[in-house]
Image (cartoon, rainbow over all chains, first blue to last red; front, top):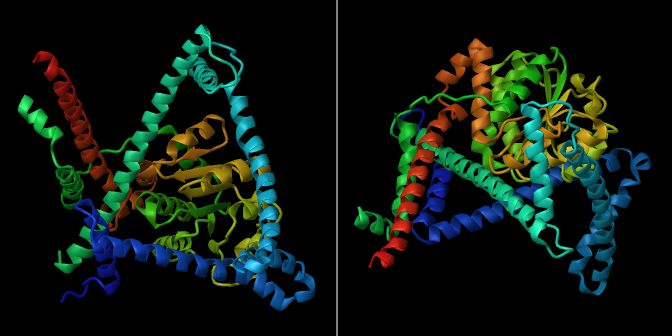
Length: 212
Length: 291
């Protein structure tokens, strides 16, 4: 046996990779085993990492080391615990308070984030003044045409007339181009994942196994 | 020809899967070394880091999991190498729950081993994973120590030398978020918008199209889109630092540059298949009219 013979972890990873690939031939017990194992391990990993990396340093340790200075963390921790009350049918309604606080917080954060961080800067970019004629001017005009025609395509509050219908058709062409670009990138991304797995199988598993 | 095209339409799709597997496997076994061209978004990211002074601080956030590691790992490691070569101090975090921290730990371990003179806590620090990215990002504007009281090993942030002059996210010259899903977008729309911190993004190819709008609006410094972006960054790194040229040519590890061979071959195969599929489709549509 070679000194670089792959360890048990590599063999397990190779087996699970092949088990997943086997679905391409047809559904089989190996694939379903790998699928179920992945779901279970992911959940266990998530619980463990949240406990060790978030709850321990941000809640348990501050309370244990300086309770007087950090007692307010109990409020946040308590609200979090309320979410689990839904598993006790008699007092399940209590979890709605925690959920309401979470939803309210998220709406507040998202509202600001979307408006201040996305809508306003994008709108500002869409209405740039034209100072002179250059390649950038042409880009801005195409950009503006795309924004307006797509917005008109998605304007459903009034029935389209002959003019807006034609503009909306231009909008569909812009949408088709963007879908094509997105699909091209998606293919590239999925191919990259396949390349990663096959690289692993060949370079980390097969080559060391056969001493290449 | 007509029989061949008609046969294509009835072809068992598993033959296509086999062809795809071969198209990717052959370039791995017999590397071609096809050239990689760089794009403006990647060059902008690279040049921005090069414009910083040694000692400046950058934040690298591992916001992806194993499901996109072949795309994101090479770009994260290339970026780390550039920081270490340019003497930029690095803060590392992870916001992706399923494996982000494990990938961060692995990448830091690999790259730090290549630069033995870079010291943990002085030249770089790994702050670990935190749940609830939007809340944590908001907190980073007030105090990094409040969001991350300790590093990944449980060492209090006040005892970490490189964090003494880095109080909040405004002290960071830029954030590089290596991202899958929406976490990268949060860095732009929350941290950049509220605190002005420049953002560089390394998204998966699937997410890359939406970030062009953020580049266009000036909310992003640059972008490394998918494996192609990572390969571009490796090329820029090789051109700037001769030792990296040697490293990327000799390493037996997976790199984006190596992966691009398979990408190019398979894309060519896909284009041919699309053309043949369309030919076969139109030929069968035309057939009844001829009859």
